[in-house]
Length: 394
Image (cartoon, rainbow, N blue to C red; front, side, top):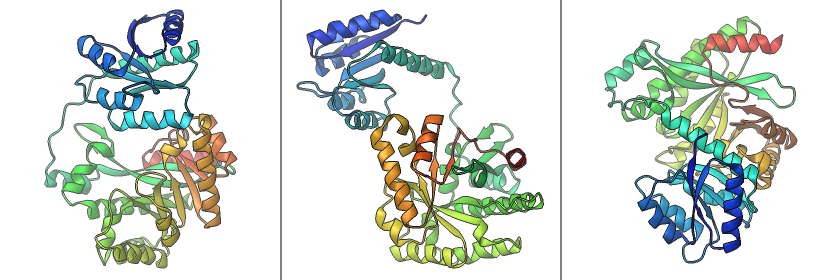
């Protein structure tokens, strides 16, 4: 059994003794104790630890300030937080740590139990396993010609992730997600190349390619009796182009397809130069019959004003609100409010990123319409998606 070095930051003498006993009972830990954040930071500069467990409510340097100091260290241990304060405070503090790039091993409501300590060990085991996994060597910036070849020769592909109805459990739609089947580097996820495509100003070509591949896949599924709507990500700043909607419509008509079978998800990582371009583009997409989705609702800059003033047909609930909702009353309440809002606005609500059956149960309870995520299926190539459809209908 691996022995993990743990530094516990706690200002109460009783808690010092209690926590030492709990970790000793769990086994496999070497525990040191610190009375405050300043002492903890000093210890971390002198000795390597695998885990820092800190109370949030501390004198002089509180838990959030300790997190900020920890993030400035050249090699910070994993972090676990504990408190008697509200669960919402605990989750919010954990989000501070994650946003600063720290590895969060656990969020614990006091009193800390042996089960909590065992869960920390499992998290540390996972972190250690990830550290042993060989990392891909850093890639240089790909040239525009290289990226274009990837698009033109079919290496950059549309894969499809199913959306299942939470009413009957059937596949009712899909999202097209980009993947690069690279001849030398293997399967690449968008994080490995999408920024380079954007930097090379190839987003129009990518959108055209994704739409074309989607229309071709829909035609094959239609031959098998499945008329399935598919959503495609559309960078919002492309709505600055006056002819964008006309080009998309022309491409759909060339396949003798129906615009209502395509939903464009407006991504919020960009915006138009003029707000009038945003509303004009969104309204024209709907006038031509396309579906329109508010992507990542509940995260970043998505707003109620945009939701009620844009002719959306679908509301995508961000995974940050779904993950952990089974154990967080605040998240469950937020999901209920969003699902009710979606119903009142006549929108289809789609939850992203469900990971457990318990989260799925919460989404059913709040009457969310659809769900997608690894619990249902990861994105797969068109032929494998066809297999999923056939299995779903059997």
